[in-house]
Length: 227
Image 1 (cartoon, rainbow, N blue to C red):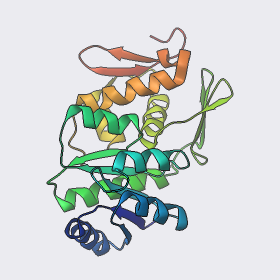
Image 2: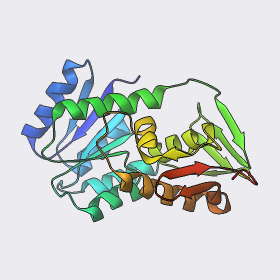
Image 3: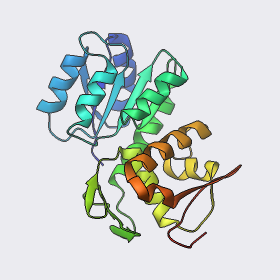
């Protein structure tokens, strides 16, 4: 598990609060006070394992920083925001954010989510290569191919597709998906899963039809005649 974390927030007091709690858990914390500095630090430092971004920052906001990082990296990203709106939450997932946390928040919950994301990012259990119905997942390379062509997925989209394929043919409730992919300490709702499934289906093209909706319950991944 990579223990180096970048915290970008224009409020020094907020950075210190987050840093103090992370340092207690033996993380190394790099700080940035605006969006431009965040990108400078991210691209100059080696082996940053996770990025925590505030939405409202000078020079470049959190959305712009996230978009730039996603051009080059699938590093887990947590977005912090003082605005708790559905539009903002949907935009964060559109850009490939892995967690969306509204201020004020519990620092202990933030640390728990950091640890959960890093555990899943470094997990290497089970088969490292999955292949079904023209979809191939390489867990080590964090690469997904559909009919031989690579597709770009966010960290959470990758985890979600992997979970679906590893449980193909099984009806999965939204609660079970939240517990497995977002971990037990995630306080989310069905909208989070539905948003990710919508994006995942779009990126998979025709193969997106493998993810079938079970109305009133959740989803099932099935190929061909497996209904």
